[in-house]
Image 1 (cartoon, rainbow, N blue to C red):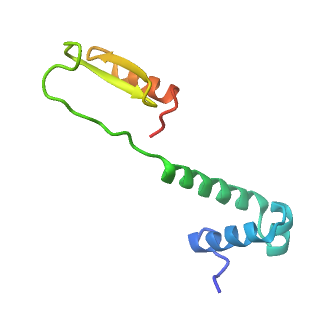
Image 2 (cartoon, helix red, strand yellow):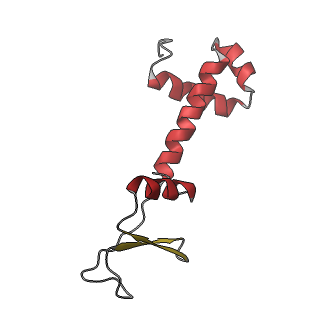
Amino acid sequence: MLSKATDHPAFWRLHIDKFHASGLSRAAYCRGQGLKTHQLAYQLAAKSQSQNLAKSSFAQVVVMDGAPPGGTRGCARLIVGGVTALEISDDLDPAWVARLVLAIGCRP
């Protein structure tokens, strides 16, 4: 049996699994286990965030020699979802490009 070291990851993995299996509300589960509701809520949110990060994916990048199609040089083409294309010239501020990528929903 694990000690009640509430900062121990194995402690929370066990309780998150038991909470989900219990069918109880957070408050009811925590009362029965002697836990603080806000701590369980924090751990559930942290687990959800780590699962979302684990589901993230990377896009395939194709590097071509020479000029890109159309003969333009010094630009990049960003294709989103296979249908939306955005051509970005090399003189744009990288911070602006990063904000654009975040705005269209591509999270790191």
